[in-house]
Image 1 (cartoon, helix red, strand yellow):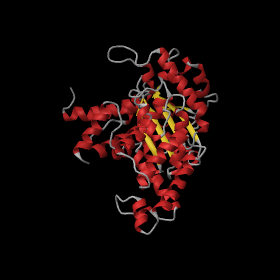
Image 2: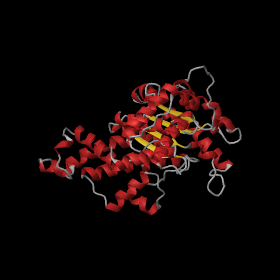
Image 3: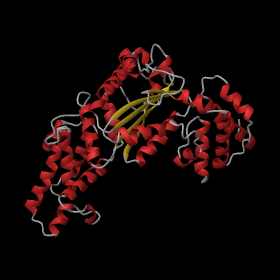
Image 4: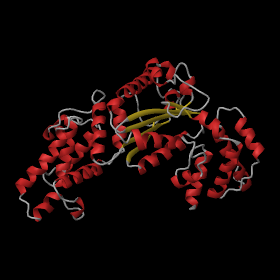
Length: 405
């Protein structure tokens, strides 16, 4: 393993965070069969969501219980299955309006690649193969070189693009902006570079002056009132472009209860309630979405804080609480507690397996005894036993290397 990758992994583990390199993350994973990410892959991403369904999940747990670790593994699985994947952080985006969620999603999307993918379907529907074009060559010029008349070819291309405009599952302004970018990509109609950027920025939810949009026949903007319809349009378009859907993770939702460096709450009561209302609306409207899987993750304070957590907003709590509970973790539950899963599978034997993996992958030389691991697992703390065990293993290495303070 490269020294830089190893040191980055160790530094992340010291901070209580998963390693940034996915190879390391995968190599040190224990409890794969029990992991919630595998369950979500098998029962949602590879089944229900892939067939056009949509779902919102909430993942909670103590610090260090493996929430972010599980979410990153899930996103990797989703990407392999053909989903567009997005990882976001509630500390960096505002969630009190749905247009903020829409912007966070589209900010991470390569619009040009999406345009190219849709144009490839248009080219194939006209009886050609997109692979026949030379790199950098547009379809219109290429087809003319094959003997196609310009006027009839332009008309056929526009008729194919108009099917998107006429699709009732796609907002007309969204379709108009996207098809103009497609026409430019295909070469049938040219846009100035500035106009291309305006259309891309509009699709991403940016507020633009009306005078720049008017020549492009766009007379609306994406805001909190129409962002859900725009999201539904985007999701439908993804599937038309051959993608299985969208998988979005928003981590650190417990930022709603946190305070900044100066002691001020990151979210005041009214702003926090706006977020809860936005999540409530998302849950209610998700039936109208196609091929979307959203996961919001945070600490258990979201459950236990009566004044600021989920229970403080009854309309949301009524939708996410688990009415049926049992002795085993219910992985189908929309609100899943990672701590219950850890309690079930994270034993002293699992700790030794984790120690062996960390030793092998990161070149450590930890030799903590099974009895000591048992004490770490059974001890009650604000931190998850997973976090405490990892810290013990890494700290022993640091002490042996003379790196401890």
